[in-house]
Length: 376
Image (cartoon, rainbow, N blue to C red; front, side, top):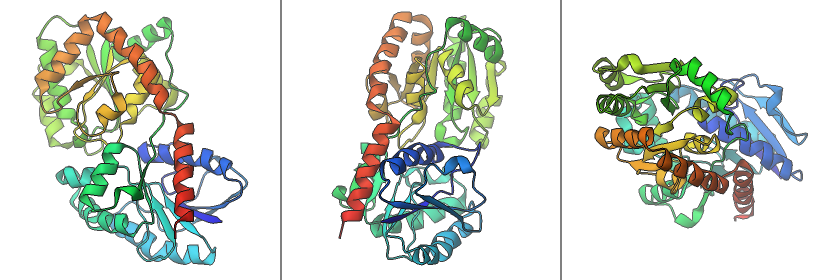
């Protein structure tokens, strides 16, 4: 069989959430399926690091797709003739987009429906595009993969899709996330937090991640006692938003908020491992990979008790309401003052992280691909 794959998010040195899922799962799946040929379709020049195996043929199809109009052109006008020319049997799309103008079997990974629940947190053209096309994608797809039971139920309910058509393919965590030595922790605290203990957030600094709520919570935490802790925000200010800007300017302790910009790999691992805890109180997640990364780095976790986050965190996190800054501040207070609670969460995290791995992701995805190929 020949399987076409949307690889437009495999960008050297720019790998983020869905791109990470694409890279980690595809390199394992393709090596485990040598009997199939894979056509990797990029929207710009590709990097050879992403050609994982000899059974891959890479091609570039213009234009680069970041604006909705260009995405429409790419998926509906450019991709179908390419797949016909190469006589493909299946189109696999890790970012959820498929072609409505193709009669091939199609398997999208729809990670979540955040744009349905929080549409105003996205630019108008983007949210309108997603809200119009993703219901069509869900019903057109031969099968659907998604990354949590929460998202599977959400897709089935909102788009009136048979739940049996949806396969859960959990995310994993990279092997580069691990605990570091006490000496390395001290060096990291010196570098990131002026030698102070700190709470850390990792991810894009955008409204859905509840950055304004996190800033308000940290201010309340600092006011509650003589805490030396800093708040380290790791990530790019993508769609930072007026809410976060206002919350930051209103803080009494904004000088204790430190921005690192984006960190990858070993640098992110050190930032997580040296922290008092990850505070990941997003409003909505289809999964929440930083939760797993923190567990693998052996740090404690505070996360939201809604959407997919309890499913990922299990018993290895303090779960809070993302809508209640005092609730979040109280959780920070507990972990800053009670080492026994913090140690217990870390021990639970060691167990919970074993549930998720990229090898398991690849196994589940391979099953989903085979089901799709076998489906009439």
